[in-house]
Image (cartoon, rainbow, N blue to C red):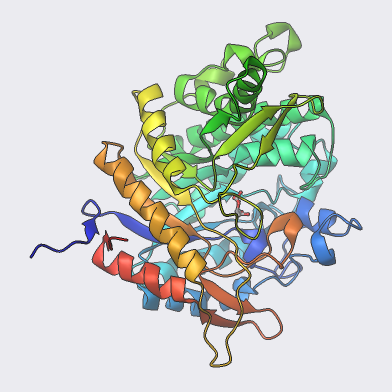
Length: 453
Ligand code: FCB
């Protein structure tokens, strides 16, 4: 009888992902400067429970143990981010060698365990000193990012092959400068729009810096976007128009410049009106320069209804009868297949894709016998991997899957209460306990195949 497991393409990459501020802690150590998240966490009410990333999972010190755990589980890749304030405490000018040395040790340790590093250069922890000079709404920040990228590449580019310029620029701009629910906590639509363009420009300039410094043909550079299939909650013209507005504002505003070198017409001024002096000649050539892969973070679909409030006059609503995770996101595995197949249909030149994040928060508990059983997460991963397999079978070139996240960690404004990890962390003593899902995903990684359901 043939093996009923569904195989993934040969060489498919299986890994987990984290982000510096969410796991490292050690915020005052070895010359690290302050980031906007250190500042934001001090604002009363900004983060649930008054939590901060000051200690987090102490991954800064415990990375050897965490890497050994990845190896033991059978994960062959690790996507992690570099904290810009560790490398340049002021965001510009002088370089903190101790910061670079730390990441050198992390990379070396990964390679010793045959784990391939995927380095994200920006996962939201902007140096506070740059925010003090205007942050992402200031054009200069994009140029400072390119300098920082060149510094990191000079230190790690001999062994790191896979680079992700930015993680989810939409969240950095929209949550950081629009709704203000993330650092730096600003609510100003003009600043938000400026942040969008300067983040994209930073991607373009960072890409250029990496290409200029490149080490041979093996170097792969991409960007990670958070994407969802968007659909109207009803057939009414109002809902359809609202759904389109959300899709443009959340996705096309980023996808089109990166994959087509142009903002969508519906983005409106200041993106399309030269008089606004936001998008300058040459910017879009940089932003739209070819990438080697697109990183996709997938968590949910978006169902949209017209609404009298909000600048987009639209709200995302929950579908009926669909289970939700602990952060209230609907579990919609087939949305992943739909998203990827749709991306390929709309962008014929779509580069290879990596799923750079996918995962779920559930209220995990340590059982009396010391284990953590998380059947909901196993089911979540299983169903999403079947959907991913279906997308690959439909012809989408997907090269790898990174579960969000290796260890429970600081979930931004939600603090530590929301646990997304494959591995449970006891924050009182930093003990790691792999959950059932960690072993399950390790089995998938080792066999490069997903069991039928
Ligand atoms: C993504 C972020 C990641 C994590 C997950 C749950 O938007 O990139 O850091 O917070 O959501």
